[in-house]
Image (tube, rainbow, N blue to C red; front, side):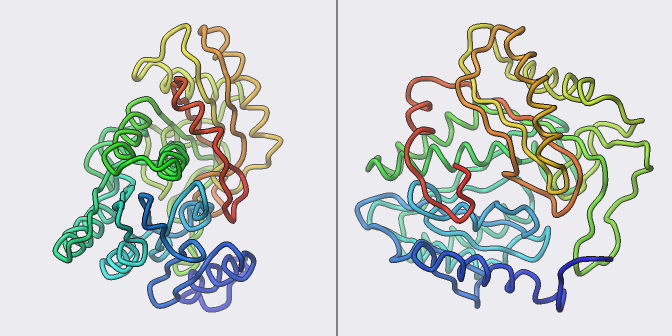
Length: 331
């Protein structure tokens, strides 16, 4: 294993310390709970947005903390849900008089941890609601989930909810925004390689040099099937077909189109995929009014990509255009 790692057990706290040190005017870091929050804490007149999951998916989730996005986030170990006490302390640290919305990607460990933390916070009279994100169309259930997984579409939920909260919308109104985005966003990914968690030291699954995993999860969960690699256009066509037919999206829709890298794919290759996806969108009668190409939800150094489509209306377009400032600087 070749990685820039010291002690694998300290990998997560060390990179989180680095994120905080690189953004001293933007973020506060609480090592005890592997938690990053906005500098200055919550605004009592506005809803706070909180999230947290396993590490290894950066810039999710701690790098999405900042004005216009998350109020706070906590991390677990690589590909492992954060502990209940970390989730609970994150809710407490971000609690505002306007309430807290917890965004949870649909994985069993995350749901269990945040369910317990939310119950504990509610018992202390914190006004908190929870919303589950499940945009992945690849499989209905996986090794980690009950129902569909939450993947790159997560960032559209964060962006829209963060903007709505900054506008002063109520907790119920921000929750409705989360629901609206989740109902109109779909994603599917493909892996060209596996990845190596620092604490494991070996790949989490094996792929032949000429194989791909179609519909892979961001923790390496199996997808729809394993097959021989095809051209970039053919792979993009399959992802686009699966995503666009799921809701389904319709001719005339205004959309945001994302090609998300899984951590080890050159940006040039992502743009090769985007070019084909954009052409397919136009052929389907969609109008691409927002585009996102880069790394939004990764799987360590896995080579691969996912394709996301979000159906837009005037409200969502305005929320996506609202200003935001995070450590990732990609929103």
